[in-house]
Image 1 (cartoon, rainbow, N blue to C red):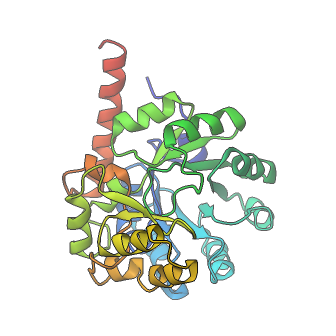
Image 2: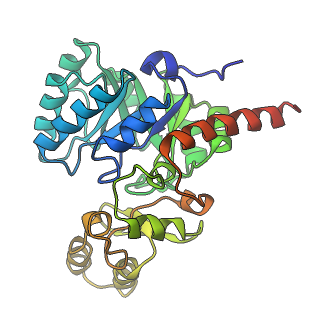
Length: 316
């Protein structure tokens, strides 16, 4: 019997699994295409992309599969308006937006039948997104890599709170790396899960090999929140994390800490392989992952793990 989820009918996918939109890792066609072909939702991360590269990636995915896919657009990005125009012109079927309000943008996309999922960091944000007319919310807990919620509330608590607060489909994210984690999220009231770090550690993810190896070697306690006084990032513990958090503990001026934090970037790690001083963004679930398989194999494995977890719970 299929798992009770509204995502397959809403998104046109076979499995209630979304590949997280990860800057650099899925800022190309390779990973999203492989995931969508496998029956989950592949997501192009527009954030660091040049407009012409985004167009090329969208067209490559559309040429490679008839399956649905999404583009993730951070609305605070200086190119957000251009990305939205591209998504409309290229007839992207699903948009995932974050870090900004959806209300000004929804009418033109809803008129074209585009499905809009919005990333929410709290019950309040989820309610506002639902009231604005989004089709679903993605709830990101503190375990997630990249930008977790400022409240630092765990996925276990946040997903349950949001599932009780809204009626639209809820997607859980943060700390989920296998089928058991997806099933647990669904037990909390989610309709499925978004996985970032698990899909980061696949053959198709377009980040530097040194980045993948650093995340692969990490344990569940080997990440840290860095830049707590600004927009905190969960990344691997490295020289940058120690320097920034050490400066904060020493009471250095906020401007000095921020300057140190902004002197280094995700691009340094993802593109150039600087895993000492780059922002090696990864979630706590890195410690649950021990291989670098093709993305399609990951999707198949997740589905099998969900069924195995359900059978165990049902005494099968």
